[in-house]
Structures are given as C-alpha cells and as structure tokens.
Amino acid sequence: MAGETIAAVATPLGEGGIGIVRLSGPEALAIADRMFQRKDGQSLLQQPTYTLRYGKVVDPKTGRKLDEAIAVVMRAPHSYTAEDVVEIQCHGGVVVVREILNLALELGARLAEPGEFTKRAFLNGRLDLAQAEAVIDLVQSHTRLGLEVAVDQLEGSLSRRIAQIREGLYDLAVGIEASIDFPEDDLPEVELDEVERGLRASLEQIEALLATADDGKILREGLKTVITGKPNVGKSSLLNTLLDENRALVTDIPGTTRDTIEEVVSLKGVALRLIDTAGIRESSDLVERLGVERSLQLLEEADLVLHVLDRSVALTPEDFQILDMTKGSRRILLVNKTDLPPAWELQDLGEIDSPVLEISLVAEPERVVAALSEAILDLVGLAAVHSSAGSRALVTRARHKQALQEAKRFLEESLRTHLAGLPLDLVAVDLYQALEALGEITGETVRENVLDRIFAEFCIGK
Ligand SMILES: Nc1nc2c(ncn2[C@@H]2O[C@H](COP(=O)(O)OP(=O)(O)OP(=O)(O)O)[C@@H](O)[C@H]2O)c(=O)[nH]1
Ligand SMILES: [Mg+2]
Image (cartoon, rainbow, N blue to C red; front, side):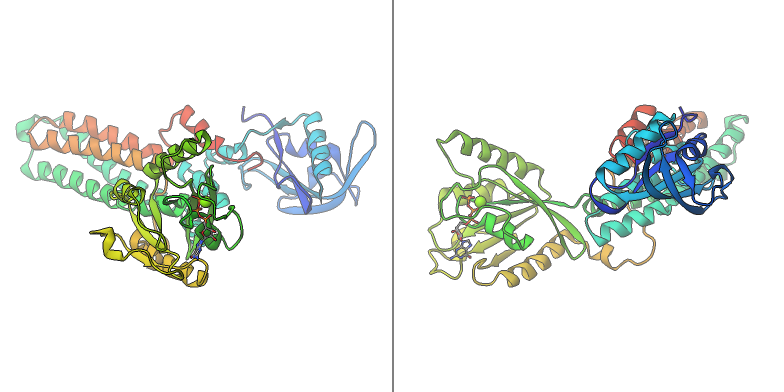
C-alpha cells in the first residue's frame, strides 16, 4: 500500500486564489513530470528538493492545456509524508483542480483516503500518533487556546511525557528481569524497595497527566453548553446575543424553537458549543414534544447548562422542574427580562448554589456577554491553563485518557502484587501491560482498526 502513489486536492473545494493538488509516493515525480511542462523545458525529475518551478499543466495524451501552474518538489524523506511529494499549485477554481486531480489519477495515482497523507507520515515514522492527532486538532481548532494546545502536542509535548513514563517503566522492567534469575530470598531488600518506589513514581506521573484531561477536553472540543428554560424566556435571544447575529428565530410565541440549533462561539479562548433547545413544557403538539425530549437528552450530555428564567412572568412548576433536573450539572442561572416589572424575587427560587446573573437581553446585551463570559471562565476553572506559558502537556482526547486509565489500573495491580510479597515475574506481567497501554497513545502498540478510526476523522488531502 505504501508503494502506491496517492493524490488529492489539498485545498478546500471552491473558488480561491490558488488550489493545490498534492501527490505523494514513489511515482509522484514521474506522474507529475508527465503532466507538467516547465517553462524552461527542463524535467521535474531533475528538479532539486524544496524548489518550485513555473509551467503549465498539459494532458500528455491530447496536448490540451489545463492551467498555468507552479510545481513544488519535496523529496523523500524530508517531506510531509517522508515520501516524494509534488504539489501543483494552480488557479483556485472548482473545475480546474478537479481536472488536474483527474489527470494525475489517469496517469497512475490513486485517490487518497481521508487523512492518508498524515497516516503515511505516521507509518513512515515522521510523526507519532499523538502528533498526527494534533494535526486534526490544529485544523479543527475553534479558538486560539485550542490552537496553542494542538501546536504544543504536534511538537511533541504529550509524546515526550509519555516517553518519559515509559522509559522509567522500562528501566524498572529491566531491573526486574535481571533479578528474576536470582532465587527470591537472595534479593536484597533495597531492590525490592526500588521496585515499589519506581511503580509509585510512574503512577504519580500518570495521575498528573490524567488530572489535565478535563481542561484538555474542553480546550479541544469546546464546552458543550446547553441553553435551557421553559418556552418564551429568551433562550434563542441569548444564543443570538452571544453569536452577535440573528441565527435563531425569536418571537413572542412560546414554543418557537422546535429543533436544536448548535453554533460555536469563542469566549476568551474557550470554545462554547452553544445549543439552543426547545423550551421545556408539557405539550400536546408532537413536533414540540419531540423537541422537548431532545432537550432533556441534551441536558444530560451538557458540560455546562445555561438556565434562562423570565423575571416578568410568575414562576411555574416547569421552572422548578428544570432547576431540579439540572441541579447536578455545572450551571448558571440567567434571570432575564429585568427591564420589565418583576413578577417574582430571587428568594422565591429557594436555595440555589449556582451563580445567578440578572440580565436583560433586550436592554443591555453587551453587559450580558461580558458578565456571562466571566462567570463561565470562573465556573470552568480554566485559569490555570490560561496562565501557564510555554509548552504544556495536556490530555485532550478520550482515547488518550482511556489509555492512561488502563495503564494506571495495570500499575496499581502490579503494585498490589508486589506489596503482597508475590514473585517479581508476576509484578512484571502487569507492568508490561501498562507499557503497552501507554504505547497506544503514541502509536507504538496501536491496533490497525484504531488507526483507521483516527484517520477517518481527517479530510481528504490532509
Ligand atoms: N422585554 C424583554 N423581552 C425579551 C428579553 N429577552 C427576550 N425577550 C423577548 O421574549 C420573547 C421570546 O424570546 P425567545 O428568545 O424567542 O425565547 P425562547 O426561550 O427561545 O422561546 P421558545 O423558543 O419559544 O422556547 C421575544 O419576543 C423576545 O424579544 C428581555 O430581556 N426583555
Ligand atoms: Mg427559542
């Protein structure tokens, strides 16, 4: 498979300044040479690495000229994929890039699968798996902070930490292997102590990494923020205010929002995946009832709940129902419509231990955005991530978290075995399992189906 030459359009399909068709593999230069005529008449095959030349793309069978273009040559192993790579930079039109890609395919290239360029970079050892995943995170990041974390990971911040832990465990394993050959009773007490110390030290390092997983997830995926409340309280108005555009329909008819609307906004570097939902109430209308059901389900998955209440109409059982439903969630109460005469007082809500903001989305939208941003950052407690400068190793993916948890379980088991005074070869069994689990993060021990799943997240051409 690595013997094949792949091709894909590397830029978004649409009208743009330039479009890039990328080829990678052993035949990349030969194929590009047959479809690209350099202005100076020289062959691409002789073109030095890291150089570009002007010319035109011509179909060799018909002599038809497709476009004027620039050919960039990057030879193995110093390219993105560590293979020979040619990028043809043409005018950025939907048809022209397709035609050039088709020509490359006719001449012997195969259409790349999603993420295949990056997958090759991984298989060829230019990136480890955590770094390859950082490439997707970088492309998909919604905020500056998310981008910074992805760049750090691409540069190896997480990989280095995992490598350190693995090295410590390897040393321990080597020590154990050496002593297994001795009869148990001859083992000096010191060595046994060292095994315990080594296991505990590695466990601590793993726990320290695991402690970053919540922040990491928020930075990578954003905070899944569900706006809830009974009908007509101003949920869609809140979404529109935070987005600064009229995204959701706002009317004074209760039950306006039927389906959920999801949009991403950035608040001081943290992405909020805002979800506006159907107002929660008993309803005989089927469509509305389905909407309410979906709202309830979303509430369960939320990282953050914004519960909107209407100060200008009397509280109803629905308000209390929602309060009760969300009391276990990280939430903020927004008491809206304070520009109108109040129909109830805050103490009527009873004991509330969530932050409460009194707002008017109609009268003072800017203040609402500022106050809510502050309240959210406080509540989520990302202050540490904000202030820590330089390279930080954060666990951003569920896959990494699971592998770390697995490694932790094996090490704990290993430690238990050891403390119970059982033979060292038994201690070693779990230790090797822990090493294997950690190796999945960087890809040393990863399974093929896991790889497929990871690279399927990419777009074609990356
Ligand atoms: N006076 C006043 N009216 C507001 C305020 N915020 C929203 N409204 C009005 O309240 C009505 C309902 O607003 P929406 O944002 O559609 O409410 P919703 O919660 O999304 O309603 P549903 O989608 O029906 O559940 C609209 O007429 C808004 O203009 C406010 O702060 N003050
Ligand atoms: Mg609405």
